[in-house]
Length: 221
Image (tube, rainbow, N blue to C red):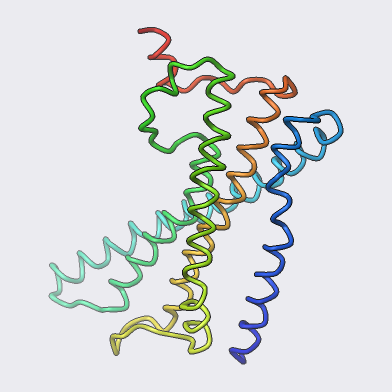
C-alpha cells in the first residue's frame, strides 16, 4: 500500500485530535453546571472505559504471547543452541504492547502504583480534587508532550515502512513505534474518563468508588 495513504490518515487523525480538545474541558463544566451535562458525561466515560477495556484485552493477549515467545527463545537457545533475531524482537514487541495497551485499563481499575503519601489521608472530596488536579496538571500535559515530540519520527517511520536494522529482524518497526502514540491517546482518553468521574462524584451525581486497600489502611491507622 502507498505510504502516502498512511501519511494522509495521520494528518486526518491529528486534526480529529485537535478538534476533540474542547472535550477535555467537560469535567470542569460538569463541576460548574453538572445537571445539563451529567448524562453526556456518563456516556462519554462509559464509552472510554469500554474502549480501554478492549485495549486491556489486547494487553492480556500480548502477555500470553510474551510468555510463549520467551519460552520458545529459551528452549531453542539452550536445548538446540540456535537463536533468531526476529523471535527476540517478538519478545520485545509483545512486552511493549502489554505495557502500552494495558496502562489505560490499569488507570481505569486504579491498579497503578501511587506514591502520594497524603492522598489516602484525605476525605472523599479531597481525593477527588487530587485526582482532578493530577490529571490536568500532570497526566494531560505529559501525554500531549509525548504525542507532539514523536510525531516527526513516526511520520518518517511510516513513510519508509521502517523495519528492523538487523537483516533477519522483523520488517514492521513502524508498528512498534506506533505503540507510543497509541499509549498516549489511550491514557488521555482514560484520564478524561477519570476526571469526569471525579467531577460527578464531587457534585454528588455519582457514588463514591470503593476505597482502595491503601485508603483502608490509612483509615485504620
